[in-house]
Length: 417
Ligand SMILES: *Cc1c(COP(=O)(O)O)cnc(C)c1O
Image 1: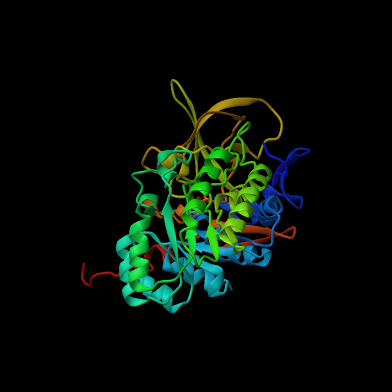
Image 2: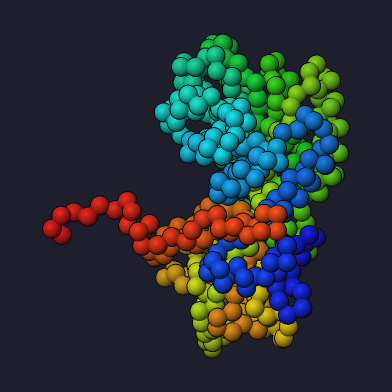
């Protein structure tokens, strides 16, 4: 599907990067299991770095995509900073070895208590609400802040993941700049960063640049800026024929604008991007075994030993994950509807053309590195799966499969029930 695949067939078997047979992973760690090829994360990181080609670029990994601490640590070795959306992600980042100044905390609708904790931890803070800006200014007038602006452009592959539109709960409207300025002035606050993030899956470079232009115009009205954060929304291909954000085109066009902005501003500012999906989506494969084949009057179902509890994106967003039968390289393909074992309709894919599936086969879901494990749950009292990382050609277990103790660990039994 894309260049540099982490999963490939050779002879009669499928392998992960480093010539690791998929079967070895399943035999050793069981299924269902998430497998991440860390070298693919580096490829993606390098693509952004090379496209922008400036030492003023900072890439902050948006870690809600995948919060396994090993992913955080690996991105740190590449030179990444961190974009966090909860105080727990901030804490994970610090545990993973990021320094406070490498962490930007971009919360939405959180309590003042969380913001106080972020101040205590000395991380950079991005505020996206006028009322919160005022309260923050009352308590911490000297703490440098970033402000999240909503430019009201329609980014995002679908409404649920689009955050920049007019009804969005994110950011302070670009039409409220005078109000922001009044609050800043009244409290003597120091705005060192401006931010926008218009949603996932930006479809074309022009939409992105439109937002960037609007933000740069606003930036001219803030005199103490050190950085401007243009968010993310970098697109990755999900299926044959999908386009990925044209990083080189974006980099070239963006730098042209940004450089002329800096001349006008009178200072070389730092550029921040905060990709999640772009960095980790394609590194991941989710492996699950087939429990049953069920032929109804109209459909052949393959029912898996997993469900929306482990991978909810297809049901939540209608997102497409390619599904490959990694137990069969050769042979005929047939049409299958792939479903889970949860007592809800949990359909992973309808009418997919897949190599003939037999019970016991292993299927691999592509694009499973972002928003997959991190959105998993224990629904139906199922255990969350294991996670495996391939680092420098070696596989490592990076999260154990859960067990009954995990399900019960926080439950307290009332005596004599
Ligand atoms: C989720 C999020 C991102 C990452 O979005 P992707 O589509 O995964 O790249 C970046 N910034 C903020 C503030 C986010 O909430």
